[in-house]
Image (cartoon, rainbow, N blue to C red; front, side, top):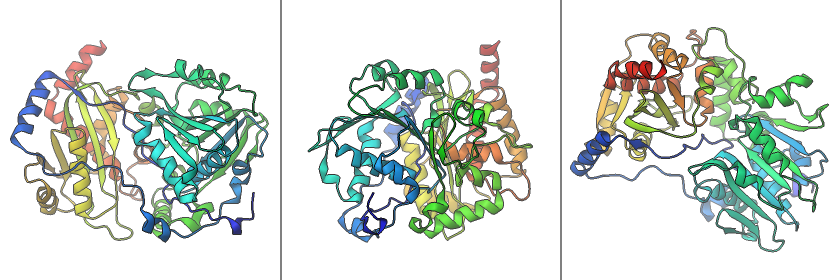
Amino acid sequence: MADEDDNPFLQLLADDAQAEPVGRVRRSKKARRRLKRSAAAVEPSRDPVGQPPPPGPEQLAAIPPVRMNQAYADLVSWSWSERYLFLTGGRGSGKSFALALALALLLRQPGYRILYTRFTLVSAEDSIIPEFLQKTALLGFGHEFEQVGSNIVHKVSGSEILFRGIKTSSGNQTGKLKSLTGVNVWVLEEADELADEDTFDTIDLSIRDGRHPCKVVLLMNPSHVSHWIYQRFWLPYRLPEEFTGVSPAGVRHIHTDYGHNRDNLPKDIIDGALRMKEANPARYRRIFLGHWGQTIEGALWDWNMIDKNRRTEIPELVRVVVAVDPSAKSVAGSDSAGLIAAGLGVDGHYYVFEDATMRGTPLAWATAALGLADKWSADRVVAEINNGGEMVELTLRSIDPNVSYRAVTATRGKLIRAEPVSQLYERGMVHHVGMFRELEAEQTTFTGAPSDKSPNRLDALVWAITDLMGSAGQRSLAVADRMTR
């Protein structure tokens, strides 16, 4: 690898993304008729909030060159001999950018066919491919590649990346993936989302092309010590949380955190990490240091309550809400606005399918909330008004005067409000469709202690499920009881 002072590489500042929702909302006939009537009465007055456009030339020119983290030297040079490589770390660690750089350089060599997977991937063309192309553009050699369907091909070497989902809207694709020929590198992004160890082994055994030494790269923010990855690759060898090196099993590990990437991060990310470190050390270790989660005594949720009831598809729904835990300002140090989309299924169970929590002005989060409502055809937007009062409704209605809106007021403590929702999780009645790392970190570390920072995502989740419970009355509990007897 060249001396780091000679590297013209440009760093993307955002390292993590929320889990991608899977599938579309399917509603009962009654709900569809109600939605059709309301849609005919109210002409849409805004565009849904989408992904930000790729940066233009002026934006790219404004991003300063940075030094590459030398922890990734082996990765970028592909000089390591082991079959398996784990890239672990927390938010802002720079691992996804380093991997994009390594893959782009590898594609310059002939004879490589790289399988790049996420567990859930609705459309590679709309998500993961633009991310990769944006990063190669920032590196300065995006012109070397061309997109062919769900593949990226190097124009000179002919080496290619195949972007695929293990679970797509068409079902589990493990059989198709293992039948791909000529694959000598497999990248499993967000590896902790793969709950089935057998699926990993099936695809792993199919990576056996002989043109180059075969490699398997697993990229992730560690989830919980009960996950099979920890049980298989960490626990038997008593590896420390931040292990970097080669384990006794012959597996290479590279672990970094935001501290290694501090020079390339905006000040608000650093400040946010320090605030979380003081307010909720357990969550700080999970989110920013990339440590494996532990069960916290006194927390209303534990990892197994969430993970064992996780789903990969959204069922038919009778009602959808978007819940907002507003922030009144967007200055440095202010809270994020919690934004959660959830629905009530025909089975009487509750489904959480998007966490769009953000930091911004009231106009920004109100626009995002209404965009989320459009995206999921929500029946109602629910917002807490303790922090903002009438401003919350006025801001929402300044964008859409006809929005179906309900204001809620917190009259009891957060822990008391959350207990009924936690009990639904315990009964197996709430399902996360996909993985929501930061929401789940809040759930599994919040104890209600005075030192706990306000859990914005959790607050919005509680308001969403509470509204769905109220809208269906106790009928949903009765239906679920009948179906589980």
